[in-house]
Image (tube, rainbow, N blue to C red):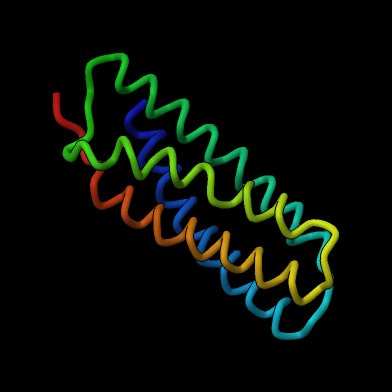
Length: 121
C-alpha cells in the first residue's frame, strides 16, 4: 500500500502541475474547456484514492514522518473540487482563473504533502 501511495504522489504532483499550466492558458485565452473540467474531476478521484491509501496506511500503523502531513493531505483533497464547483457557470475567464487557483493550490499542497510524508513504523 505504501508503494501505491508513493506512486500516486508522483502522478498527482505532475498532474497538478499540468492542470495549473493548462488552466492558466485557458484563463489567458478566455476560452471554455470542458476537457479541463473533466480532468479536474479525474484528479479529484485520484486524490480520493490517495486519501484512502493513506488512511489504510495510518490504520495499519504506518504514520507519516511529520504530523503536518495529516493536515496538508486532506486540504489537498478539498482545494480542487471547491474551485471546480465555484467556477461553474461563470464567464470563461472567471472559470479559468478559479480553476487555475484550484489547480495551483492543489499543486502546492501536493508538493508540501510529499515533503511531509515518508513513513515511520
